Length: 165
Image 1 (cartoon, rainbow, N blue to C red):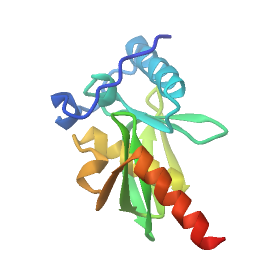
Image 2 (image 1 turned 135 degrees about the vertical axis):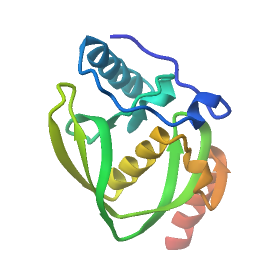
Image 3 (image 1 turned 30 degrees about the vertical axis):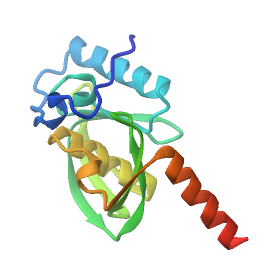
């Protein structure tokens, strides 16, 4: 396994549509293993292959108890609404407020090509939507209705805590 360089906003690869995976081989396994290691090392919750310069429909997501691999994922259902902060390993030191579905059900293949369904609510639903948008060449900054620096976001949280106290 190896750490891969995470591309940042402004890199044209982040705005390209990824191609479906058709070969479930050792190269895919190495990519998935490297992506897991890279995401964990960077303290991320999710990572899409375009973020490491590979234009394939591959995502890894940390569910807390396990890291799942999503190959050729697609959303089957979504419902509800949540409004909250998002960050991105490709948009360092910035946070945006984004509306997302509160529930998402998707299907994806694993590293062997077998299909599975996954469901998530709240943070996991947000992560699924965020990462799948990377596969279509989009960053969350396009959806955010407010962007702020990490410092501004922390100040906003502190102000909210003081108001609640």
